[in-house]
Image (cartoon, rainbow, N blue to C red; front, top):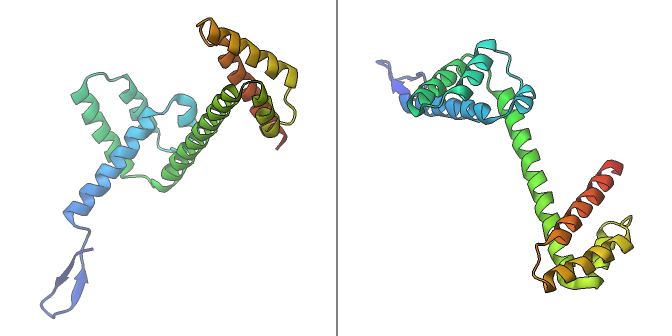
Length: 177
């Protein structure tokens, strides 16, 4: 907050500076743009109570002209100044955290598949160590099929099947936790 001296040499608190106001408006506009980028099911999970704001968000999705979209995003930012952005910000953060966790789990599963395929038949033990309920015979068959496909320079169908099976195991394990 800017402070000015009055005639009595006492500091008085003024309103936020013009730069601070612009930063806040840009932050709210960026938050509004994040809301526009969400799909309908994600948007329903965000606590937006203002019907005008929801309507503006849905309208902005339909706009294809860059300049019109930019103006509409500014309008959304203006509407956001009249509401409390904290619950929306928290909901967006929770949504992004979930996305990051899902992406990290996906990458770990991809790495496990790569490690299993690199090990060959002994890679079955890597899968069983991670997923005790895994079907060893099914894993062996997939690894043997992958070896045949690699030798014949065929598309990696077994690798995809292995990934799908590992994902099933991960989902089943996640349900019991």
